[in-house]
Length: 358
Image 1 (cartoon, rainbow, N blue to C red):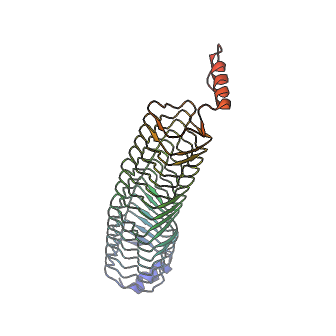
Image 2: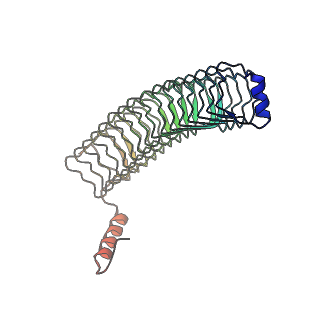
Image 3: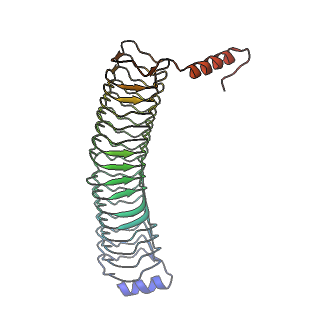
């Protein structure tokens, strides 16, 4: 078949099924709304072609060139697209499902809202990609390169990103839900309103990064480094930060409820209005930290070092303090009278016959 005959079939509403179209030249052609079924387009040149709203099902696209092509609202299902080139292509609304895209090159693409589900993107390149939202769901991303890309509203669900490349990347409302990022280096990078819920971040280097209003609920951060980070209003409930370095960090108004931070180092950190209720902070270091209005109610502070810390209405209500080292205790609230009264009332209420916890 010739490119012209293929175009005529598409314009006539015919499905291109089980055709051999390897290495054909479709550059700049209008193939809008095409349906390709079990067709071999390996090595075909579709640079600049209009493929909007097309469907590729069980096709071979290995080595195909779609540079600067219009691929908006296209669907790729069960395709082998190893080494495909889509440099500078537009991909708004494109969806890839169970596709082999190892070594794909999408540099400088305008991806809009695009999704990749159960795909293989090992060694693929997304350098300097523009997007409104990208979704990578249970997709292999071994050594995938996202350098210099703004990852805006990008979702990495259950993705293994331990070898992914984020050199110079920026993160705005990105979601790393249950993602594996162990050992990544993010020092001095910017994260705004990002979600790391239940993510594996052990050994990550966040030194001097900006982590504004990020959520680390349930994240594993053992062995990570957060020294001198700017991370106000972050959430760390139930996160694991045992032994983590947070020296000189800015965490004002952050939530650390039930965090595990045994042996963590918060020396010289800003922790004003932080909530450490029921936190495990035994042997943690808070030397010279600003703990103004911080709340350690019911926390484990056994063996912790708070020498030189700044206290102003800092609550340690019913906290475990055996072996806790203080310099000046001025500004500490050992027991919050209102909270104590509320707890006593609750205990009496539950002690009544027939009472149940609410």
